[in-house]
Figure 1 (cartoon, rainbow, N blue to C red):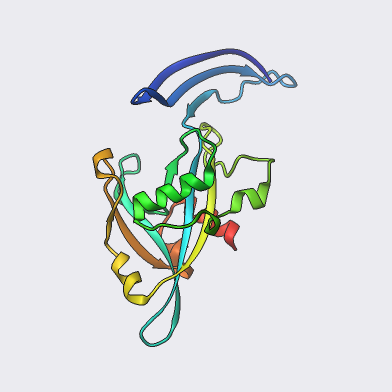
Figure 2: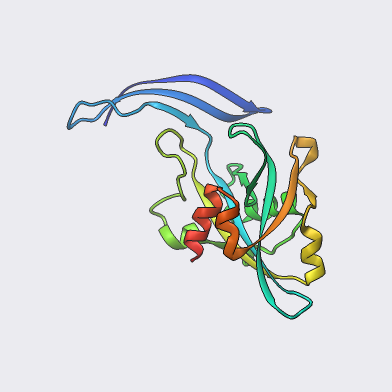
Amino acid sequence: VVVNKIEVRNIDYFGPKVGFVNLSVDAELTETGKKPPGLIFMRGGAVAVLLIIRSKQPSGTATEHVVLTKQPRLSIPSFAFPEIPAGMLDGSGDFVGKCAEELKEECGITLEHDKLIDMTQLAYGSDWKGVYPSAGGCDEFLRLFVSTRDMEWNELQALEGQLGGLRDHGESITLSLVELKDAYKVAPDAKLLSALALFQ
């Protein structure tokens, strides 16, 4: 690839830090001379966690539930889009720490770092940074984690409808529970579907 020109179209800041960048790249493939699509939205990496909670109903039946967050996603548009807990990376490179932080902020659930398994690391090693949901026009990659936790039935039920997120940062999150076997049918979330594929 020969890159002829890179134009910065727009920069969005999060306080003093660069948040999102829109680029226009003029490039050619050396073998064919053709120009690949050059409009790029740069937002960096993110972490997401498939949190599976094991419990027993009062009848004794064992259950496995996935914790979902519901929040407004104006780009879709949806005012209660179901997805697994996630958050943008902060540049520290501490994937596990960021994942644990997002779980605490969005769900009020504290997990020790050694309880979080990085499925993308197990799947790809150092070949890829993570899963790329939209590589045709965006640099975003997802580090997908899984964690299982045992919980009493009444504690599990108390999570349903619980409010989460950092309200002073504009987050408006409501927690929801879905059985693991039905999760793929309930939430059309690429993070969830990718995590389920790696988990299984």
